[in-house]
Amino acid sequence: MQKRILSLVLALAMMLTAFAGCSGGNDGSSTSGSSTASGSQTSESSASNESQPETSGEETVVRMNIGSEPDSLDPWQSAASDTDAIFHNVFEGLCLYNEKGEIIPGLAESWEISEDSLTYTFHLRQGVKFHNGDDFDSADVLYSYNNFAGLDGNESVSSDYEIVDSVEAPDAYTFVVHLKEPSAAFLSVNIDPILPEGYADQATAPVGTGPFKFVEYTPSQRVVLEKNEDYYDEERMAKIDRVEFYIMTDSAAVVSALQSGQLDIASINADDAAVLESQFDIYNSPQNMVQIFALNNEVEPFNKLEVRQAINYCIDKDQIINSVFGGYATKLYTNFSPVMEVYYNGDLEGSYDTDVAKAKELMEQAGYADGFEFTVKVPANYQAHIDTAQIIAQQLAQINITMNIDTIEWAAWLEDVYTNANYEGTIIGLTGKLDPDAVLGRFETNYSRNFYHFSNEEYDKLIADSVTEMDEQARIDNYKRCQEILTEQAVGVYICDPNLVVASRKDLKGYTFYPVTFHDMTKLYYEG
Image 1: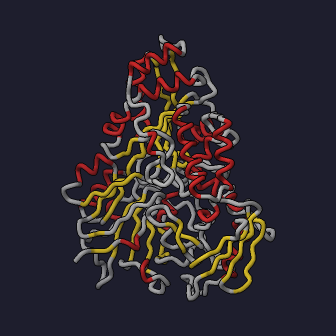
Image 2: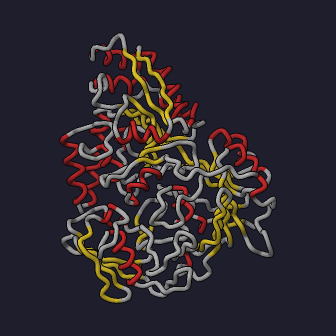
Image 3: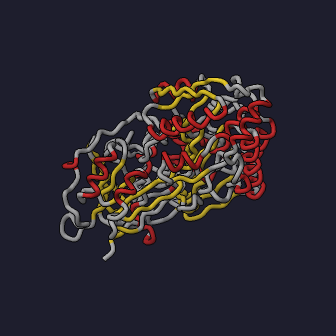
């Protein structure tokens, strides 16, 4: 299966916070939350007992938790967000992204786009070396893109490159991509890792160009990286020498490891933040995710707009945020997080503020004054969604709706809900992406994983137009209108963007949040 499809199927599976999501775009992507490589809990003895940043001599070390095993050390085969969060320190594409989600130069120091938007000319950095000592040049990019796009008889790594017509390398530091049609999102896909031509051991000894080198992976225990002393960019040069990621699946074990000094920094849940806040610096930020109470718009009675609107008015999102997420979440009104502020439609804030009387009125208009009964399917391995379902069930009882909760295994959820849309309602998390098409395109009528069964002619046209719209303001306007349509049509209940919460020892500074899952270890440093 293509990498991007897998990447969206599994992207949320490995999130350090305890919930799942489904992700997608017009590329056939799918959900996040799967546990194809589930991590074993690491015993406390697995991590160092030292509480000082130095482990030997003057070497500085940062120890952090991750929630799952790497699904592959080869970045072209990996699909899990936890894995990418680590290995984005090791691998780089022609482009990178910053903490605002903006595309910035990576292995390409600059680029030009032709007037017809069909030709991209990348000017590559000189003097870059792979971690195995090989020099980086256009032959490596040509090799990588032939694999990305399935050219020269190769199997396509990613469906993102279906629009690539041909590629060429006119000299050692110039690379040219010719597209079949204009694509406003093309730059954002160029973050995919460039690998060295002819190197065959990525799955066991991965080699990239990034600020950290791979050292070791011990299954069920840890992944170790070390500073790349030969890194080409002084501004992104690591300030610490060694990073150890410990595979820990139990939140109590994470808290214990922090308190005993076995971990220096960790992703934690909201309840644990309250326990740790006096001992550690607590950071939190929205993570570009949408927790949604999704409704199957094709089944009775959710095929009635008034019923969907009534449910929206009945739901008290603040109660969910405070009870389930300990207040560490951002209330939402459409399928877009304010983290991506350029495209976010802030005018929708306040839509469907809780109004039970209005909800009852709409139920009566729809012919359901006496309510109805239905079942919500929730992944059994994500407690946050189960807790949310229990609160929603209590709230819907106010308008005579009986909501039964069916907790099902993740594999069954993928099959029943995501693939076959065999459900009435579900609660899940939708991961955000760097390009809005990958976020909003999942509601387009013909999108293969449109499990909401939402269909709107105006919406479909806006999505189609935006794919090739090169005027950024026009594209922004289109996507904001898409958000309006989703909210007006009450496709589901957009609840919140649950914040990612991190606890850090007080002398460790620099942790930075990104709109996609990434633990940027280059920014970390010890004070004093």
